[in-house]
Image 1 (cartoon, rainbow, N blue to C red):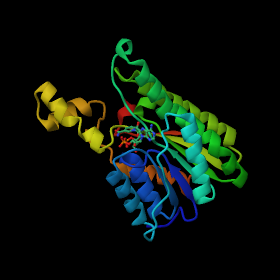
Image 2 (image 1 turned 45 degrees about the vertical axis):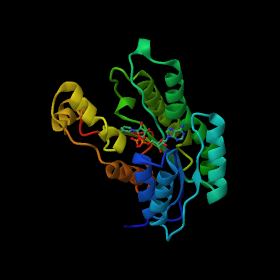
Image 3 (image 1 turned 90 degrees about the horizontal axis):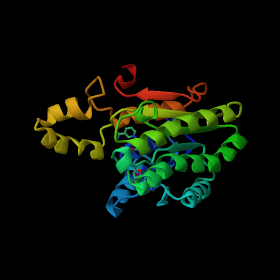
Length: 264
Ligand code: NAD
């Protein structure tokens, strides 16, 4: 594959699994230096590092175990990334969690955690890394939002609030940076095939007394017209486009990748 990110240095949050790991691997393949972040079992983190090393002449990437629910954790991770890679040109704000309950039953601590990790961490990381990007006259900020950054679903008050916030934040950063060579964009995926998302199919089938196939198309992907998962590689390729050489005029956008969900 063309090494369109040769010489670029990318910090990808929540990159020990799922979408973040997919982006990290593709970016390494495209020539970027990447720094990983996220939680996981030691063997999963080792596997994520090995996946990057395999793209990168055997060199293990730097990794931060920072807890992004804490602003100081976000700032420390950014400082570490600047030191480890001698600067950060690309910031992918991807780490995120989910919890579902009706508004009146929603636990306060879950609200605080989702707002902190899914929204405020993107602000703190952007605040820390934008000045260096502006100074160098080139930078890319990609926020992994969600279809739930554009529309709502019941039971997801904190997630929908945080993701709508991220889409708004993206627009402000895009406007402020517009003349500096830095762009900011959001990606809004529908349901993406990750181990955690796939694990919801079995319980849904049991709950509704239907086959796993019906549970997927009629319940989990009820709002996704293609009735197919979005694949991690599709999201990673969209992120690569936004960080590559042909997207300098894409700025402040919220790009849907959701099988037609937003067309309804
Ligand atoms: P995932 O659970 O596989 O990955 C989440 C990552 O975030 C992991 O690396 C995890 O360790 C990290 N993380 C969680 N809390 C953290 C914390 N406090 N500090 C640091 N890291 C933390 O999930 P995913 O499905 O790959 O989701 C990635 C992003 O994509 C999230 O922002 C999610 O909201 C968004 N998204 C996912 C889907 C989907 O269907 N999977 C759809 C739309 C948007």
